Amino acid sequence: MDRLQLIISRYRKLKQYKDLSDEQITKLAEEKLLKEKKLEKLNIFSDDDEKELASSIMDKYSQYNLEDASEKDTLNQLVYLEVIVERVKKFIDKEFKDKQSIPMEFLEELRALNSQVLDYKKELGINKEKEQEDWVEVWDELRQKALNYYETHKGCNTVKCPYCNQLFNLLMRTENLTPEKSTWFKGTLLYNNQVFALYDEKKITKDDAAKILGVSEWYIDFIYTNLYLKEKNVKTD
Image (cartoon, rainbow, N blue to C red; front, side, top):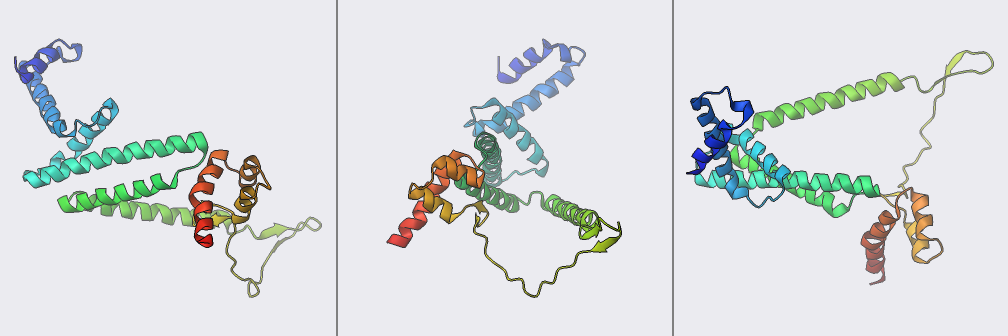
């Protein structure tokens, strides 16, 4: 018995298919077999959820009718990368939930993977219109958020006098203000060189450093090793 007949035989035994005709069951079995053949080149996924995700992504792109062998190979690479992107996202989410921090190398890896995904889509001519629609949708959403912020905060400098109960505005003259670099961030990372210097000199404990920055001790270890010590070694070379 070949694979198709085996699937048909199995489907005939399932309760949800008991009212279907032989023709309908055969069509479902053929679709199942086609999906299996598509996934043969993606059998590197051992996780059932990832296999199902790869299958759904492949189905999503089936509308583009990519017949050329090189296009099919590129499509396989695209599906593989999209599954890996989801795997990295899950890992990042878990790290953040467990340790309240995200390893920088995984953020960089996610950025690189997404860049590759976009390159493959451009190569195949996939989702160009959809990407434009998504961009417009995101822009409209950001615009609406900005308008909502203005509406809810435009009166935040208007206060009421505690003595006469009259409203008045608090205005600030800005000509004497000067821009100063924040000492609590390195790029977008929460970081303070003096805190890590004190920790390095053993003047404060790891627990002290974590409490000052409001992070976990794991975050202190990671930033100390991957940022502070590297910068310190560069300065001493």
